[in-house]
Image 1: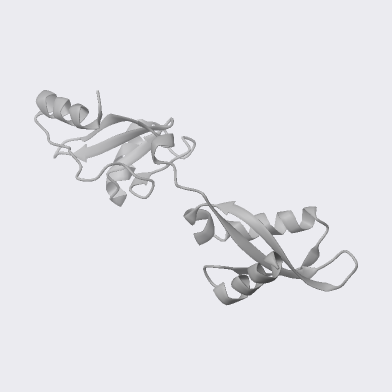
Image 2: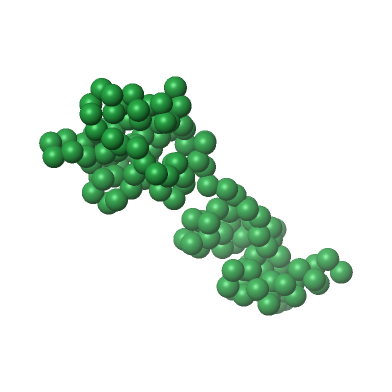
Amino acid sequence: MDVVESHYRHKQLTGKNIMSKKKPTWKNTLHNYNRKFGDINDIAATTLDIGYPYFCWNDRIYLVSEDMHSTTWIETNRTIDDIREPVRTMDIVLACTSAEGTSVLAIFEVECTEVEIDNGEHYQKAKTMARNEKYEGPFVYFDETEQSEITGMAAILKNS
């Protein structure tokens, strides 16, 4: 049974139409790590409170709806893997110090999601890679989303 069949079956059983106009995606699904919520009903209620149409529970995606008396949720037959955020590769340029003590620009290719970029986690990944290669701080980070001129020139130098 796919998502649409599940919704129609739910409507037949309850008389409530919970059909969402959008399919579940990474951005319209509330993600949890089960430790944050007591049970599935808690996360369903929270999902509605903050305006998400879907939530993830134990790697399964559920659609939520509310009538005057209760919160309803139904499994969509999708998993977290069906909506996982895409990963992209980007170059991070670090101004740092080599093991010999000279100032250098080091370039690291980092895999990250948009959420990781928004949270600055891609910089931490690059810093870890730099430390593994014996570079030292202080570190100044440059990425293509904020300093495209610097990373573009560094890529040209890297490839020449």
